[in-house]
Image (cartoon, rainbow, N blue to C red; front, side, top):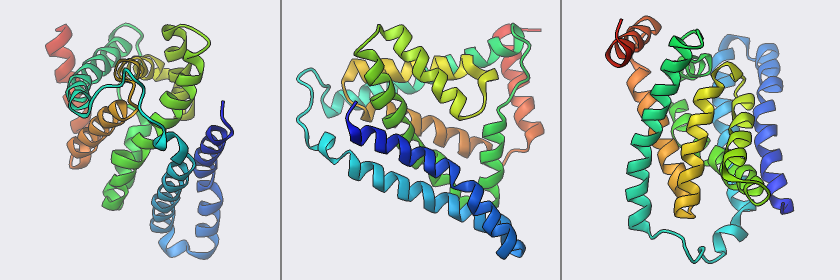
Amino acid sequence: MPKRYWYVILTYILTQLSSFPAALIAYNYFSDNYTEVVIYWSIFSFLVALIISLWLLKPDMQMPLHRDASSSSHVIIWAIAGFFMAYIVQVVASLIEIKVLGIEAGSQNTQNIMGITRAIPLFMIVPAIIAPVLEEVIFRKIIFGSLYKRMNFFFAAFLSALIFGAIHGELQHLLVYTSMGFVFAYLYVKTKRILTPILVHAALNTMTVIAQYSMTPEEIQKQLEQLQMILFGG
């Protein structure tokens, strides 16, 4: 793995960890505006991480496309198809977790993000734009791409999705993360363009944020129950 890839991963990890000292500083020196300071720091740190990562990946962006890489028009077509593929597998995986595995519906990570977004709407750019770019570059281009050179598609996609789920602290929803990871990895391999899973990931996150922005947790739970009735009945 090129050294610059390790630097990108390190940048992402440091960005995640930076929330702890930021929260401590906000608590000690800006207690009256604690929440706002922490949220704005998160926006700033993710934006800086994106800029640094893109700068580190400049050599990759200057390389000629793979000879089998999809054209821009095909990327758009696959992004649209991939959006529906990813949405369907996400819904099915979520319902299997609920009905078969007995896992409680909903994602604490998503609830946290929505709570922050409602407090500071500008934060929406993190899950909608910045995070999809960083996460697809790291988990698909770097981690999956490196593993795929050494093992078959299934294990490479599974291991990258496992790491993705662990980073988000939601191993109980591993089935959802894995199913999404398989779709994103497939789109990356199919089109030979990391832009394709980035577009799909961003579209899904944006749809989720917009759909849940004005909904209460109770309304979200009701929507899940209605979807469960439609697909499984009873």
